[in-house]
Each structure stands twice: as structure tokens, then as C-alpha cells.
Image (cartoon, rainbow, N blue to C red):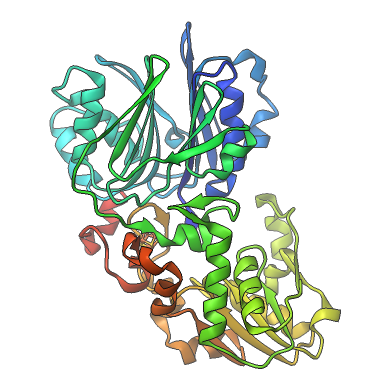
Length: 459
Ligand code: SF4
């Protein structure tokens, strides 16, 4: 499956900003499980808390009562650029002559290599392998003496998908790319402001959502007030459709659309496009749950929980994986045989990337003695890599890149296979269809990307 790059969360003007930020990161854990960090400041200066792994594991060794400050930003990471080493944990913090500044970044900068080369020629020494570090060097090198102006001038120079949180000595600022490709929203809790990748994370800190940060907008939170500006007029909306299809939590509202409803509508559209006679609709949990529900509601075929997910599989289970080498999907998913046996089963998932897990799931269903398996995918075939912040394998690994639909059907060993079409997906989006990036399906990247330079972009 694909991996989201990161989740970011920030709190302005709250005495418990550090604890609230950790709570927010916990709610955004699905966006990155590799490492996490929080940067905050109080009258004694800036402090950093960083570690590898999950938020709750990290907090076992931290006494949060000793970490107090009124402003904090946090980041939970899955590496898209840079290796998995601790030096690449965000937020990054630098001390420039304009003052201390920290940054948490969700996304990928497609002109990072060119900017890095220019900055190196001017003497910049990069401490990490992250493209996120580029923005800090741009700010430090900016001719603008005022930090706000330096941030705006630096944002004008970068291209790609980004949502940034900056912590400065004065407060916090949040910025979103001119495509609105990565999500970022603003919330309020009493007199405090919260900024988060997803609005579902606001609920855990009992904040309410005010609005999304607009594409190309920068919001400053300082001196107990909020101000906003646009750092560019070249706004060309291209929200990441995969956020709605898979990455975001179903209880979030992203790009103005409730995620659970969008997924259910995709399932309904899929049922209209690929009607069939079957006994039961099941989901690949949890990713296919809402689309399967929609498929069932539209087709009239009953929805059942035919696969049960084990939520307690961690990275430490490598040994167990070796023991069940022939089908390690069984560690995560178990069939409910009395629902499946002798049935014509429609199984719905949100997407297929490599196809290897889907094939293992079909094998689990066959072992539960289903009569027929009909695979339905609630998005179009995944064909092209992402350059804006989603970690994708080499395109030769995409099953839809290597085989046609009939080949995929045979590889999965299913009786029928149907993907949601591009037209079907656009029908679900209705009037909003022109606001989205579909490049991983149709190869039409909203900003020109030098495809051959992917490795350099990610350097
Ligand atoms: S290419 Fe796909 S995954 Fe990447 S931003 Fe566009 S829609 Fe999202």
C-alpha cells in the first residue's frame, strides 16, 4: 500500500501547548508512524522532543509536566525524502541571524535539488537529507530582514506540494501550497488557535474547526491575534484525490468534502458501473469499509463483515511473518467462514497498488470456501508515481502498469474485476472535479515534473 508522508499539528497561545500537540499527533498517527517530534518555546528558549516510533511509545519516557510553553508545533513522519535516520526527524530548528525558527513540513518540493545546489554555492551546509530543510536555508539567506517577509519571499521560490508550520520567537505561522495539494486546517479552542493536517485531530483537543488554510495562503498567529495573506496570486487548485480515497481519516472533512461520504459515494458509483448478482458484499478492512457500504446500499446486496482485522500487528512481528511465510496477510486479516462459505462474494477495496496483498486476501477467501470472488476497486487503476508528498514505489511495481485488466484478474485469481472509472470518479466529485490532482491515474501532473529526475528530486 502507499504511505502518506506526514501529519503536522500546531498550537498557539495555550499553557498546555506541548501536551495538546502530542494529542494531535496521536490523532494523525495514520499519516506517519516512523518518527515524531515537537518543538516549543517558553521563557527559557526553544526546546525539542524527538524520537523514533509511535507517539504513545515515545511518551512512555517523557514527563510532559516538565515541558510547558504557549506555542508548539509537531510532526509525525513517514519518510518520503531522506532516510529513516534520527537526524531527519522533524520539526527542524535553526538559529539564523533573523532569530530561531523551526519548521514542520508535509509534502514534497519538486525543485528542492535545484534550490539546494544554488544554496550550497552560496555556502549553505545541509544537516539533513530532507527537502524541508531547503525552506529554512531560503529564509536564512533571504535579503528581507523582517522574518515574516523572509518567509513569504522563500515560499514564492518553492514548487510542489506543501503544508508548513513555522514556530518563531513571536509565534506560529502556517502556509499551504498554491495548489492546495496537501491539506491544512485551522481550528480554535477558547482563545487558542490550532493548525492541523486534518480537522478530525482538532476534536481530540476539544477544538472546533474554523476553516481550511486556503491554497497559497499564509496565516500568522502572533501578538494574540491572527492575520493572513496570500504569498502568490498563481492559485491553481489541485487537491490530492488520494487523501480522500485512502489517506485521510474517515471522520475528517478535507477540501470541503466529508471523507466517509466521499468513499461511500465512490462505492455507489462503482456498483452502478459494474452491477452483478452476488450474495454478500464485504470490505477489505479498514480501507474499503465505506466504499463497500456504498456498494451494498446501491446494489442491494447485503453488507457483511466477512474479514476481521487484527489491530495488534507491529513491526516486531517480523518473526511471526516468517512463520506464516506463504500468506502473511493472515496475520492481519482472518475470514469469518460462516459468512463466506459457499457464497458469491463481492470484495471492495479503495485501491490496488502492487496487487500482492490483494492476491493474498483472495487466497484467504478461497480457503474459507467461497463460491465466487468478485473484486471491486473504488478508484481507477494506479499507474503513475507521485511527486508531491506520497511515498510511491517505482512505477514498474504498479500492477496496472505491468498488466491489463484481464492480466490483473488472472493474477488475483478472481472471477471478475472492476475499477471505478475516471469518469465515475469525476461524477462523484461533480462540480468540484476540476479542483483535484489525478496524476497517479492519468499522468497529468498539475505542475510540470521532470520525470527522469525523480531520483534527484528525492535526493
Ligand atoms: S499524484 Fe496522486 S497521490 Fe500524488 S498528489 Fe496527485 S493525486 Fe495525490
